[in-house]
Image (cartoon, rainbow, N blue to C red):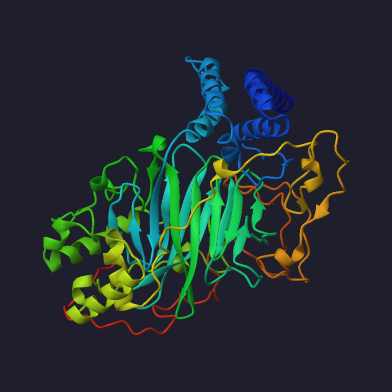
Length: 524
């Protein structure tokens, strides 16, 4: 009886909390609906869903916008009014609706805030949000960036291409509660396609895919753009080198969230020098601590030994601070594998620098980089990549991101569903009083960006939840694997016949031998 009473009490409390917030939010909803009855209604309901960590409602308009992108279309004066409403409804003494208002406030602030960029590219080189740049030759899975304010996290898997060079082979993301992964090489199963949503393969119908919790995936050329419902963005530039697929990853976050990030791309506090402090402040630091391997005048004047000491620190101690664990990983794993399977703390065998190339090699690499339009602040990384591996440089200019404000919103005659399977009928954009809309059209299957597998059935919708809070089923159609188990965390112990760890050199390469001996890194 006490157990029943307990659950009834919890239910009534949650119901009262939701009702209180929706009553407070009513003025915001009315303002958005006055702006646009159909788009504004969806935006208001989506903001409520995000504040409650629920799936957003289906779109009933032709645009493929996220809630953040739609909010940027609302006149600035109206957004300022909404900002005032948020402050008026917040209880300074604390309230069980304050946490929901925090989410609404985050989205509204983002719509009026500039973005900053961090990147991981090449083999790989990283540029933090505060523009500190460094080389990070490691093997394993790492937190590239994670927000303390929202459900935003990006993890990268770096795999060896030779004894001393690694590439980003996969990226995993928490997109507002949806776990999205892209595998450029070494997929966790035998299914078609490189994208996995909550462990299941997905197809992009046309150029846009709607995620259950409000995010959007767009595909153009070789770039995948993943947009968070709160406005953050990741652009994946898909490349290959010697048959080895890899990713250049560009991350967009907001200036107004400064100092709320952690990971390899730094804390975004505007100070480049502290981006490599890591989590463990007690770890020993090299005697010489520069904050930029490439393009920093003080580093260029340092001795070769000091630079290699610095690179060894990054690959060992700094890397250890941001390795994922079996409890924190966002990746999928084949049976018998785990994050440890992709980890090699001995890597690299030798730390190489641009200075280890001879003058002819440096000049030739520089000429190729200049011919490709590489800017001065990325020239060092490009020379490194061209001189040692001859891999294509990061895209120049940077991949463009969608700009919703360039869109002209037409008048919608009547709402109609716009989902991953259904296209908004153009007839519904006719003037009021026009012809009735035709039945909903199916999207053109020939526009799939990944080849469908006719042997794969669509799964039934389920309501399971992963231990870490991620939904195990996407609300949009996905492919269902046939007898190919995919393991997600928490990971099981490796099976006795687990495959051996990936070799140092899965793809034969012939890097230029250094003319100056390197500094070997010890075991972590």
